[in-house]
Image (cartoon, rainbow, N blue to C red; front, side, top):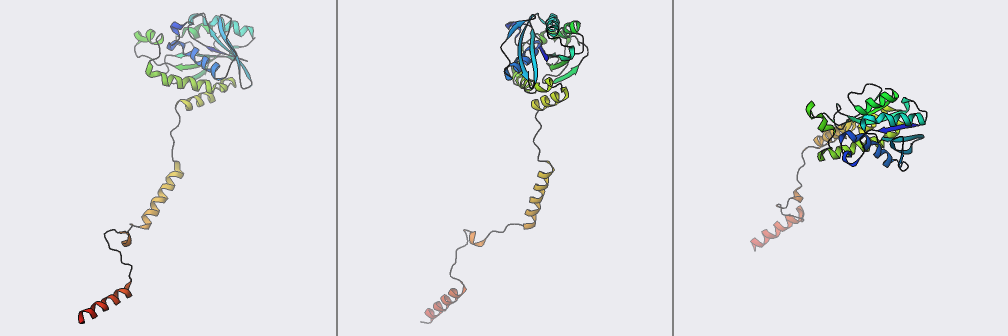
Length: 248
């Protein structure tokens, strides 16, 4: 069993904030994989479901970001789990928008939700870091984090959330490297390439064209050239007839 924890602040006022992208990610997992309807427990909203053969409990703490660890600690103790069974989805200020990275353990990097969880269960849990980008100026960080995603960012955001939900099964299998690889492939699909075989084929066709030489126009196909279907013998007889007429 695993806990998939999405971080955010409760209430419609915060729903579209960059700081709530963890909520958005687990909501898309719930929707895509048909998890059971919502329950309220452990100071959180929860959903139960399966990813492959693994049972997963989605947890969305309702204690506001700074106290997220209370709900996570209660849920973990209820199921007798360890930090290794916890996967947390959250916004990463120092990761470019559109990027997703996974790591095990580490510090909070100034994220109050991660700091709270660490204080309740320790640091050895998996973190799915969803890039929201840095505004470039420290004075603008607060407004950036607690502001909605821009309209122009929406298509890329949807692509990121879809990729996370589609490949979440690898997280359930505890294959974090494969999860990152497949998510990256979905967000930035590889460009199609003809490859060596296609290049060789194109070169062969070019060589064949050169070997045939220039194409000459058929005289019969030239509309400016009058057609003559009589043949040489008929022409000779006609010339003889013309000569006899002159003698007469």
